[in-house]
Length: 332
Ligand code: NDP
View 1 (tube, rainbow, N blue to C red):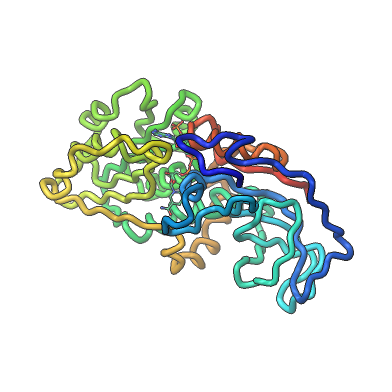
View 2: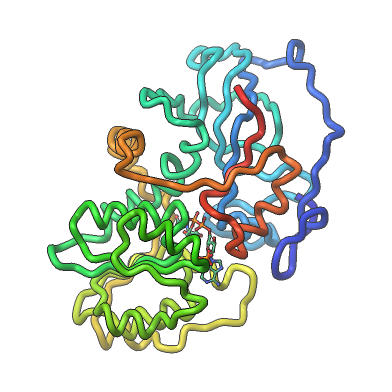
């Protein structure tokens, strides 16, 4: 991480790829820890929020200038002096954006069993943090009832698409939006009843025709949130406030009709996935199996090599990613 961006991050300026560091894989001291080879890294929308002045506190620490980015990843253990970590274990957790690293903190990683033999990349997507986001908050806040109408924004991404499939599994009517025809086709393929491109079709008009909305899964804020507020079922619609990506790279947009929150008796639930870990065991017991049986489908946008990280970050912020954004750092 090189520089705090104004607006969109710029590859080569905000982030730089540095190939100068070398590590002796056989001799680097472990001091009771373990040496990990990184296989896949996740690129997520929230990373933009970590590119900030470190004095501003938030739910995750700011990236440190001159230090590697960090985010969720999966890797394989090459050497270990740690009592609970073995050579060949595959670890999921917060990774530095490095090809190899030494850690002593076994508690911050999960050893993946992967009985289903899913590709490792799945464990940073629908089988990892974004899937957990959808699963945990759906369980905690959605309280679905027969006949409910659900609206999901960024319905083609890993969070949105998982929500869509959880809602469809409950037999609910699902409306979902995304920003390209390709994404609309994917949303239809996973069972969305009313899939539309918010760039070419007016969200308010769709919700007026297909609503009112009992559950809104908000990933974008802005105009979509305004349209959902106007079309919320009355009273007691649940608005699951998961993200507001329309505002991550600018501070100029303000939602104009927040009065609808009281006037329509809307229940708002804001959350950060790491606060809902009570659902984690259930997630790992059920979701990998659903993925392997094709009950949760997903799309990935895989780029190979750490040098692609800067562009992948921009793509996720601008919607150029065609599915869950993943950096493939190395094969096994
Ligand atoms: P995606 O892979 O779906 O990528 C983000 C997408 O947001 C882009 O592909 C783009 O798709 C869309 N987008 C970008 N700008 C806008 C805009 N101005 N208006 C509408 N859509 C826009 O991301 P994820 O599935 O990983 O994450 C989805 C949301 O969930 C994000 O807001 C993220 O911050 C949030 N999140 C929240 C968590 C929590 O704990 N609360 C945890 C994880 C994620 P398009 O082509 O459709 O425009």
